[in-house]
Length: 394
Image (cartoon, rainbow, N blue to C red):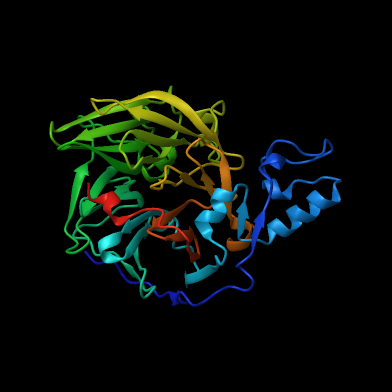
């Protein structure tokens, strides 16, 4: 089914916004050592921290207006000396929120809209023309959210409706042929699949996805029947099994695998800011990124804390070919090296409307960062190819 096409203001890659080619470098020492009279909190960005030191205050003030903030020379290598922020598409209403699925052979990024009045949409951005159109699917995708590209198929999570269960879909981007892959656990509704990734070893492939309570608003008020979990679907054995429970990760959200298929990264997002749900899921867990090893039987083991989210939550997550971890957070797109050090930020204070909501997701498309900023889509041409097309054909 082809959904109704909406009208977008297309600006093209040549639409550069003002002086948005500014990069500010901040010593990583300031991330843990400031003048003792500093005043900062988790409800504001790090660069909004107040201090009586005039040089630090001036640096932070300049950073507030800079689209690129470097905490390590490695980030400068990623963006290069002439990085600039280009506005590719814009609409008066929010339309670009989640997924950020790069389809390299079609030069496209698939993404999903926020859900309004129990309705969400699946869109496609052509990276050559910057045209945005509604995805062609043979069956409706109900409240789409996260996604992944694997072996010539786009996989999208759907959070369902009061009458239709949440599920995971596979879509052939060339034909629009769409299938439901998973929609229950022995006749019980899933809570709401949020994000999905695939892991391959040898001749076997496994689909991992997160399932959490954030989609309960689409169930007609019915309480969840399953505990929040990370699940593994095995198409070879025709089985669906839970592999990580809420005792390990309270509200599993974003999920991605490393290029070498040996590590699984998952974001925990307990601070969701929705009345009634905060108390239901608890507030003792951390908004954080965790990493697991993937053992020889393709199960996640050896959980380790990889990083804490300074402000808001780490929502969308992507792992580049160098092992760096990119996350969508309230401060913007945050880049950590493979050891967990924050090396730089694509600053949402410059791109998002004020008051700025959290940046939820983005895409790494070869040498291009595509940021989904609700009413706008931004692109940044990088100095490195951070994800090669071969990544998705293994």
